[in-house]
Image 1 (cartoon, one colour):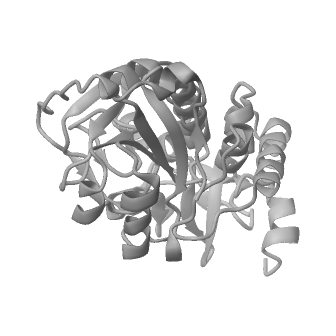
Image 2 (tube, helix red, strand yellow):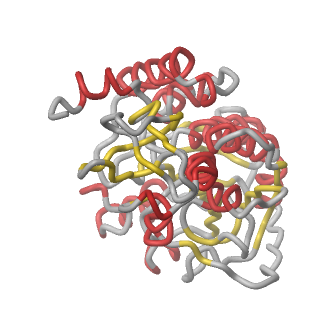
Length: 336
C-alpha cells in the first residue's frame, strides 16, 4: 500500500508525528475538494508525518484520467444546458478524488473486496499503514468496532448541522425546511450514526433562488477553509463538544417520500419547484411511466409529458436527467 511521507530531518526527529488517513467515497464529488484541503494541510503541518487516501466505495475506484474526463464533461454539460446548476470553476470538484490524490503523489488504496471492515484490511491498518488519525468524507460504509479501535481517533465530515440533520441528504433537507443557514460538522465517530461530539462546525446562508448544487459548493468551500483549524485540534488532542438540541434523523425512505411522486395531481406547482430546488431531481410518474425530472416548465393539456398539478397548473419536464427531453428520449430512453 502507498502513502506520502515527509523526508525533512526536523520531522524525523519528532516523536509525536501523526499518520493521517483520509477515507473517502470518490462518487461524492465535493469530497475531492476536502481531500485536497486535508492533504495540503497535512503536508504543511509539522506534526503530521505521512498521508494516505482510502476508497470507501463498494465498487472499485475509477482511474484518475477517466474520472477527470467524466467530471469535465458533466461540468461542460451543465454550463451549456443547465445554467442554474453551474458553480465557480473548481479543479478538484471537476476532476474528482482519484485525480486529486494523484496530484499529491498518492493513489486510492483499495480494501480487499472493497470492505473497510474486512479482516485483511484491518491487518494492513494495524501492521503496515498504522494511521493515528483519520478523517472520513462522504462514506456510506459503517465503521464497525474493530475498525474504530484500529485508529486512535476518527472524525467524520457531515454536511449538515448536528443534531438537527443527522442521516442522509442533510443539505437538501435544510433547504426544503426553509432554514436560514445550512451547516456542516466534523464530529468524532462513535457507535451511533452522526452522534459523536463535534470537533468543528460551520454554516453558510441559504440563498433564495439557489438550488442544491450551489449550496453544496458554498458549504464545501467553507468546510475546506477550516481544515487547518481541524488538523490543529486533532493533533492537539482537543475534545469535541457534545451535541446539544433535539436530534432529527433523515433516512433514505424519508428522501424517497419527497422525491418519488406517483401521483403529481396531489401537489401544487410551487411544491414541485421547492422540491426540485432542495433535492435536485424528482422521480415523477407521468402518463404511466416514471421520469427522472430535474427541471420543469409550463405544459399544456395535449402535451405527451404534461401533467396537471393540484392547483390546476400544467407542467412538463424541461430537463430529464439534466438533459433536454428530445435528447433524453433519443439517446437514453428510446421507448418513448
